[in-house]
Length: 422
Image 1 (cartoon, one colour):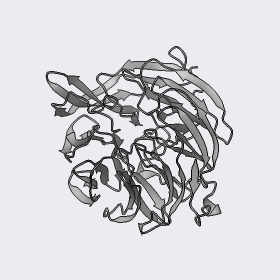
Image 2 (tube, helix red, strand yellow):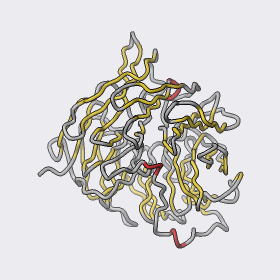
Image 3 (cartoon, helix red, strand yellow):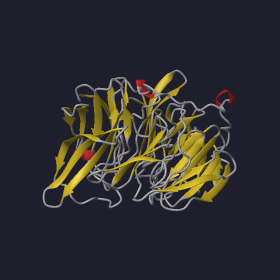
């Protein structure tokens, strides 16, 4: 069911067919880069590329290599190297939280360094890991930034040297989740816990705190990743947290506007932005997808919510926007296509399986990956059309990455490079 706010109407026609995406802070170096969670734009869109429509364990696999430990961070890629985090756990000795690098051509493991040690061995949520946030790559090619929730945040040189480490302690029910972002020399992380909640920026070179924007009355948590957007001539960092989401001045952290949803918490999906609207999931209990105009000031709950989708809103996978259509999939495999401007439902269909990974759009197709190793490839549009279903061995909760015509998929035990074979 979709509810549309009265008096809001459709956004301006000048943006009706163009997705308004801010390419984050020099992160787009070339078509081979996938520098952060959900790619160059942070919204799941790959640069134009030809990637396989079909694959299997025996088809279109260039290489498959084992990955030690457990982690659901997504691959990030630049300068011919792929980066992941993982947690190697010994029930007697604790967990080693590590950064791994692989050569994208051969799959060879070229770096394996411990960033933090932890005495934690018991997962707060069995579906999560101690290494779920995705690293982010500095556009200068010299640093990788990693975040392990309350255990710590760090900058690591691409040669493996630890440049700085810092810690933002907080209490979370289910462990870590949200990934850091980079903008204008600042590393920005959302800390959203039971005991404290704030958006914080540190100097990416030194790790020294530059600003902090506190969320009042923290009594629950969120696990979302902030998104840099441009609204008119002004940049904002849009952050989803428990009970409210807000737009912030990137230079100071000052809250520009906020929208409230009193029953929403444990928010996981990364928001997306287009047509002057931010699209966000309100989280658990009764999940709702909100479309909110991002040009407000102060509390815009009553004035700027354009529409709500109450049936089919995701708990974990992020939405994806292609043209005038918005696509979401629930954790239980129900996919929905809605008009991004009005919220009207075009179709709602079962893909099957359980879903945690966020979809990607590449080569004119949308790739939805479920937890059971199956990727459904859909044609975008107002009619439901499955182009292919592809299966790999293993469990797949990490979102895929795309670089130079290849898909990179992480399972619970392996990393794959998938591309058309000559």
